[in-house]
Image 1: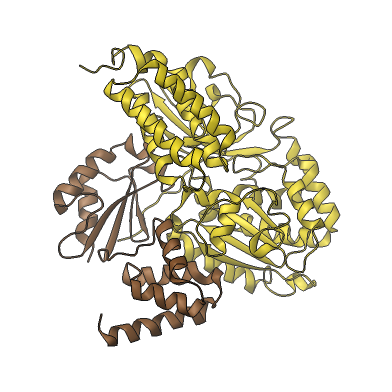
Image 2: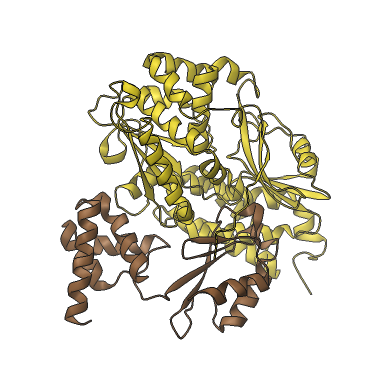
Length: 404
Length: 157
């Protein structure tokens, strides 16, 4: 029995997958002053690639400014959003970018310890990643006195155990500390009070992978790609009804229409942008742009053609959230169950429109009242699918929900 | 549980504690190691871990019950997890699911009588471009069809 995954980079763009020599980034960074690195990352306009889009330079600056003997750099490799697999590709094929990004982050904020939180489902990568870390140590890119300077940095890999919510940064820290992965109240933010109460930077795999390129090729260069508010490029994990699923590096600002053409999708009815917690975009909105100013996303693109039953898609998403809600706060714990029940009512044809409208209101309550991103975003697909595919779901075929 | 078994389990856990540390942050790696070796973390193992880390056994149980890859009840020797997220669903997960349950004679969430295989659903495995996907213990298999899935199950010891 062998692991049989395929290499799946369908398109290499000019930023993240541009030529890069191992160690280049660290070498260049160690020659710079810490403030110069912060300036360069700020100049690049790099924003968090996990989906939330928080400016990376701000996160680093706050951590650098925090006073503490111990600081941590955490790489969030708990890639659990349905339809996302770009981190898998980065970790398997470009580990140098991820790890060097961590080393540079560590140097910049004054940390000597990095932790990769690798999701349990990716355990099969563990040994190759650990081998890679050993090689880096051999080349003095990691460990004590890196490249002859006074800077020490080590990286450990910590395995998750199958919990979607641990992708949320405070839940991830709870999990690292050996607790249930339940999100914390914020503030305090991890930049001040993170792992073990120490200032901690938590960055997505893709965010960290952009850093070595920014350092070697300048923020100015990075900024040339993408749009004003969304600089650089983005890895999109494309799956569903198309001829060429896989990872695509595209500049921010690409429209859905352009993307669909590239991946050879035909008869497309809907595109789910941002995974289960994202929004479902119907045909008449395919001119919308992917980027923080319009459709912000962590990169998950799921394509549905005309044969797909959108109610079935919605039910699958809601079942996912019911299972993955950590159960800590009420809006999310109960709300998702109610939304799933509502979806099943529509399926059976026992719903009333009054009740469905009440559930949409409940969804809006969840968006403001839930403690973390899970409950705040889980109603997105419920609301957007029921709004955008009303006719399909409530009239045609289902005959007002009645299947008979 | 025999006294001998208890002693060897205690020794094993002590080994993990020495390796990963005796602080709370070591709890997950220790539990993962026990789980890997025994396919579940027994009541006795939970108490031993709690004793060595100096925390309440309930804390250990609460962590086990939270994570879907940790278990407090006995499982099969091999755990087979089929991805049930929409991308895999759209490319033939149902056919694989039916074939596997027919072949093994058990439903999802159940273990075969000989204790060889536990069958489970899991959420997105990050193989959406190559579905349907399945994980056997920690190995991942992609682009499954019923026949391929059954062949993989037959190879499991």
